[in-house]
Length: 87
Picture 1: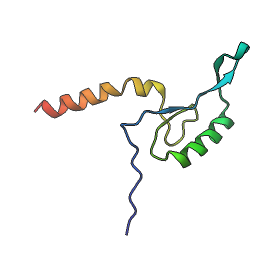
Picture 2 (picture 1 turned 180 degrees about the horizontal axis):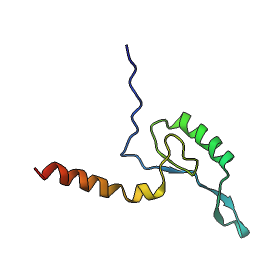
Picture 3 (picture 1 turned 45 degrees about the vertical axis):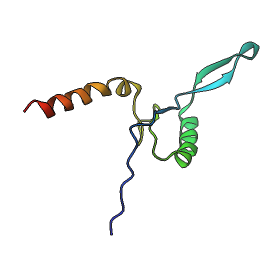
């Protein structure tokens, strides 16, 4: 009767769409910031291909996480583990 909600997979790494590779001077590869319009287009194509992944962007939309949250996720896991065994 009711559909299942999509569950994002935690074991897969997040895809960073804030920067894109560009060919620089002497054929070197450098990364430049993408605009919000480019991020929407990239995210739309990637959501079709990888619907269960996280995306790091500066759009603050659904399925977006900040890089700071990625670095500090272990603190939340540690606090949950500590709360589980504190009884």
